Amino acid sequence: MKLPLVLGLALLSPAVGANGLAIEVAKTPTCGCCSAWIDHLDENGFDVTTHNVTHRELNEIKVGLDIEPGQASCHTAMIDGYFIEGHVAASEIRDLISTQPEAAGLTVPGMPVGSPGMEVGDRQDAYDTLLVGNDGDTSVYREH
Image (cartoon, one colour):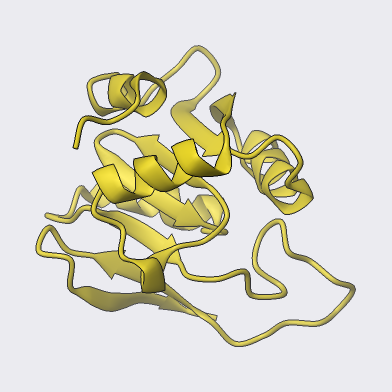
């Protein structure tokens, strides 16, 4: 499937923008936790370009990137040829970019409380950030 132009360009763009690591995020316009995650990236020196898309377009992006339903969350980003799915911490994205593993991307499936953008007081659910291999298999990248 051909990727929508909004994220198709990120596959070819350099990872460094004017103010830091350049990342493109696709989200629906009304999702507050997506906006909170984008704030987390901004606060951690990322150069974020946001694309507000419909639910259908967002699902098409996920399908185009071979993101399985069990790996999905509420927003999808692209940076330096990797996808970032869901509430992945900025430090983990930086680590991914610096180590350049053979992989498709990182995901935090669902919307776990306590992940960046999903903060609710002091509550912290246990969750894993997963590294998604080019074959779609996952392994634990970080435990939280």
